[in-house]
Image 1 (cartoon, helix red, strand yellow):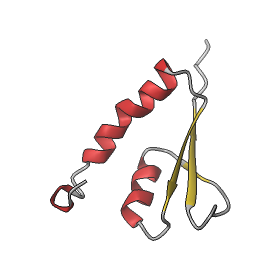
Image 2 (image 1 turned 90 degrees about the vertical axis):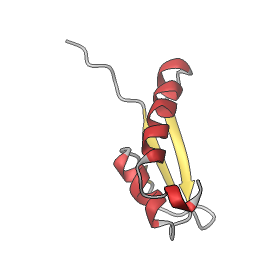
Image 3 (image 1 turned 180 degrees about the horizontal axis):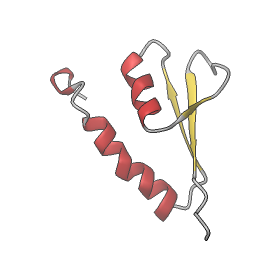
Length: 74
């Protein structure tokens, strides 16, 4: 994304329907992301989207995942 558009919440809004599509339409059980651990904005974005940080770096990158939430029954 071009720098003048950083910090406006555009990526968060763009990723919400992408995540929903992955879980609802594609039937994914997990969505994964890797981020340079120095990229504080990307780390914050994934945290806001409820991604979990895996305990170890992989190839120097922070590894995040988001699991499909179970359907509420009852």
